[in-house]
Length: 162
Image (cartoon, rainbow, N blue to C red; front, side):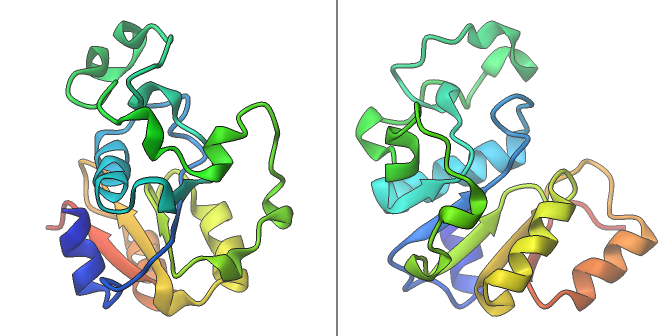
């Protein structure tokens, strides 16, 4: 799926990707987690994660049974060496404004619904044409959200439409 999203966005030649989902570390979401896993399988450590998600990695010490769906299918699946620089510095906090967005060829928001404010902030700082928003909710976007998705200029992928 990650390769498809990149190809359909015209970003299949990207060398370095920044993945953003502020909610994912504490609130598992299948679509977002699986999108990140796919990006890590393609890019390895060249896919940086702004908000590190420890439970995706083989060495996590987190009780994954407490996660959504008991963590089935998405926990402890990534090799530890696929962590990007932002994840390797887990002890350090990286304020968003200290990250050089110009270092990335693409920016992926794993859940636009759960990160709308942050996504809009990033859209001002990073080219919309190289920004991917994923709407992975069970229900299609409401009218107002659909309008935002259509007019923002980002590459948008919606899981459920009616």
